[in-house]
Image 1 (cartoon, rainbow, N blue to C red):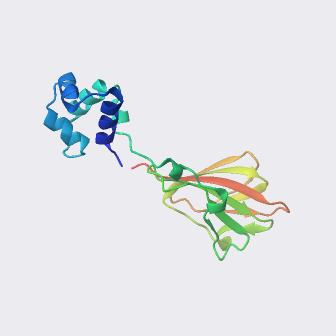
Image 2 (cartoon, one colour):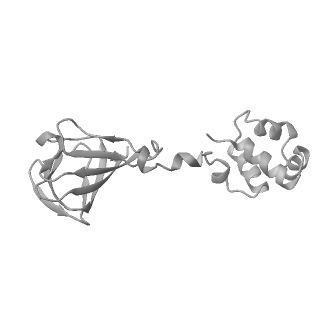
Image 3 (tube, rainbow, N blue to C red):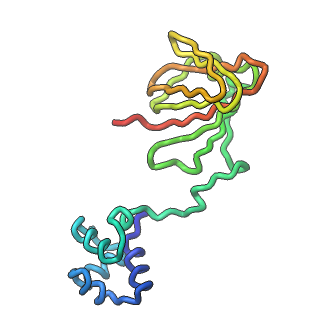
Length: 184
């Protein structure tokens, strides 16, 4: 949540200024500054620019979302792990702490030896995906082509592009996938 008022008030408290002091410094009315501190109203860009300059912030910093920094951490023990019943030996570990405003999701895919995703069927999704092979070997299968990929290789999968992957080896393969909404 964006809390401009909290930032203005914190500045005033740190500098021991009154609302009147800040009003004189900015040329804005005490009523407007009071409203902004209480998060009432919808200030114009010129008002935000004036206040940001007066309190030593950039407008972007004044408008930055307040975060609970604890929500930025996802502990291994708290990761959501799921699997598709058709993929008995493929496990998906959600690595993204929370749904990110950019629409990005990070997943660790653990592929047991001699396994394949989606029960051998093709899969597609509306997001763009980048896969990075952390360890092991796998085969990425598109409708018209197959490619062997191994540790350190990266694959880009466009939105709505049919694909699946296979681990034909005797070793575990782990693949990091990053999915992001396509640009509109």
